[in-house]
Structures are given as structure tokens and as C-alpha cells.
Length: 282
Image (cartoon, rainbow, N blue to C red; front, side, top):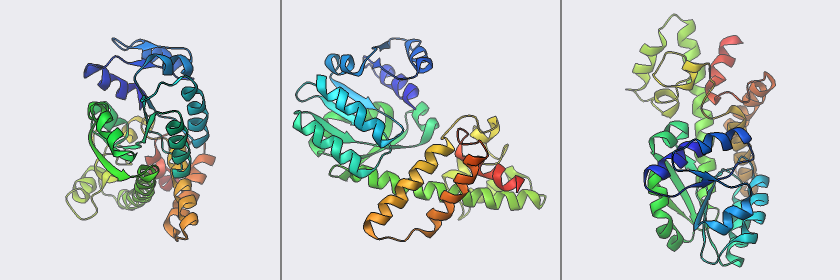
């Protein structure tokens, strides 16, 4: 996600400096026309006006911001696009406030395709005045943002969105498997679903059946896209959030169990639409 987001910032005239723990990612970043890299987060914070982060887990975000804020400047803007727990985002927001900085928790929806096309949706939690200051950054990487409320609110929205995403992907994969095994061509069923009441992102954009729609990760053996491991992480975040507020999540539990089985098959790094392959091979 970070590389295409950086490309869009560069395309919109921003000077972009990158850092990643992955040497491969750093090499990819250096190849971007006009991009620079730094070796440490402290060097990053000391030399830029705004920082956009995207990391896999809550612990990674907390650790990164402990380092970034040591070299931060007053009024510096931080935008975290990671999908983490709302409590962790609130904690980072408090850390930034104590340093005189501005922080927005702004997870995204739209996947790699949205990042590449600059059509991401940002679900923003934090100070609304800080959002106005960061609007140029966001509009360079996405087509829409929604102010969800105070710190942590954007994460609540994103987690609930991804709970639906995981469940609908499983539903589409299961139904498509029935149709294909019944002798129906997947592209024909996809065209029916996508002009009918079953239409959703999982059927229209990220269809789990190879050949059903163009540009879906399923057409590339599920090699690119949103990793099943990350979807499983988000579903578990949904369960934790539901437990905190006393909500029942029966379908979320079923989806978690399915993706746990997918991970056991060694498919955790494949796109989460690989649920279709799981059903096909049962």
C-alpha cells in the first residue's frame, strides 16, 4: 500500500521521504522518481513537516511513534493509516498531543487497487482542525475521507467495515463455488450478481474466482492484494471490540475460524479471496 500511496503524493507535487524495515521496500522506494529515503525514524521526524504511517499491528505503531515523537517538532502532523485497535490509536494520539503535535488515525479502504488509482477512502478520527490541515495529503492519495469523530473513531469504522468485508468475501466465495461446481461459467454468474442484489466489493472488484472479473488478485493465483493474514487480524480486532461493548458477533467468529484454517494451509500471505480455493478443495 505504501509504495502506490507515495507515488500519488509525488505525482501531486509533494517531496516524499520514505523509511521501511524491509530492505526490498527501501530499494523499491529509491526507484521512485523524486523520492528519497532515510535510515531511521528519528531522522525522518526531524526533517519533514508531515508523516504518514502504515504498519501491520498495534505494537508496531506504538513502537514507531515512541521513536518518531522523540524527534518531533511542535505542530507537526502525523497521519496513521494502519488498522489497529481503537485504544492503541487513542494512546498514540495522547502521546502526540503531549509533544505538541497533531495526530489523525486515518485507516483506509479500497485496497491496493484504490491505492494505485488514488481512490482510497480515509476514515478519520482525531481533531477536526488537524484534518483540515491534512486534507491536501489525503486528497492526493484518495478520493474521499469521512470525519468519524474523536481519536479512535476512524478505527471503529474501519474495523466494522472489514468485518463486513471478510464476511461478504466468504459468502461470495461459497456461492460462486456452488455455481461453478454446478457447471456455470464464473464470469456469467459474476455479471448476474453485479447487476443484482448480491452485488458487493467482493463480487465486483475482488471476485475470488479466477476469470470472473478483470484485475482481481484471483487471476494471479492470489499473489497480490490484501493478505489473508491481515484480514484475519482485522476480524480478530472486530471480535475484541465487540467483547468490549458486549455485542454478539456470530458470523465474525465463523469467518475467523475459516481464515485460521486458510492460514494453516500456508496461504496467509495470499489475497484473502483465496477463500474460494479453500471451498473448492474441500
